[in-house]
Length: 372
Image 1 (cartoon, one colour):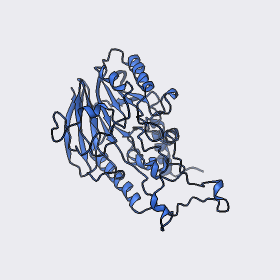
Image 2: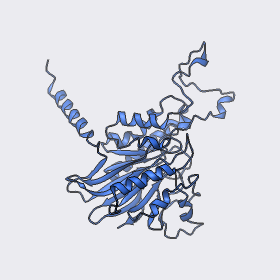
Image 3: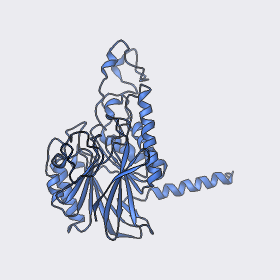
Image 4: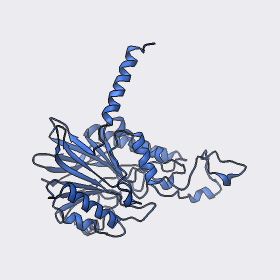
């Protein structure tokens, strides 16, 4: 029996799209023919999945989706980076927190925009039992379907141990052909999201415009640090693919390095820093294990981008590169500052890296040239 014509067309379009979306196994992004630039949106600290047993929690996720939708529809980016703390795992009492991760990436996926992600300190935290659950109101209904006759046998559909980084990454990659996220080398465990993507011309893949490095800065299930092993991986990889530092390099991770403390504006003296939020002190990684020294020694490194501090959105010059925050994008997490996203625009021939912040109400501020 033949299918109706309109169903056949829908099936054909779906098949073509599916084939197109699988062509990125070589870790390469492309500037499309006729375009002179490549635009990236950074979404940081979305914190999906908070207080899901209340009315308040799901409303925050809806608001976060509105923020992302507004930014995406106004900026029309080529690529999106999820810069950690996509979910608040320590607030999610279910076995598979990927359900909330999937919600968080849905605005990008629904628009057919490719993306990559790195982990933050909240993404795989163990569940933290709210104290109010032990008051007279009791534990809210969680629909765990526990064996009532012997609850010790199973937690049912609930889990209070968190979803591991590896499980989150596996679910993202299995369910989303537009994701460019990677597991990274196994010998860097317990860190997971360590990988590099290259940006090149669609009609000339050998001509590289920039390399983008993504690193797992820890936290949650293990200390907040970029390890010496990760630094060595970066050093070996960058020397192999960009030995003469001729190609610009851009770096992404979640928790700021201790170098951010060095350049952070003091009091009201912002110096050469560009931004609009200077509302808290830098909450840096626990230690430096060699990563910043390597970045400082490479003239090709133009900027580092982090999240983590919701009350900061500045970019500050540091030696020969820039240290930048994104902008708190989600309604989850602490702070009531207006939400937004940092935008990056890479221009080729000659290379330049420009950035600005797009707010949830649509206005733009804090434009800065990070390289030219």
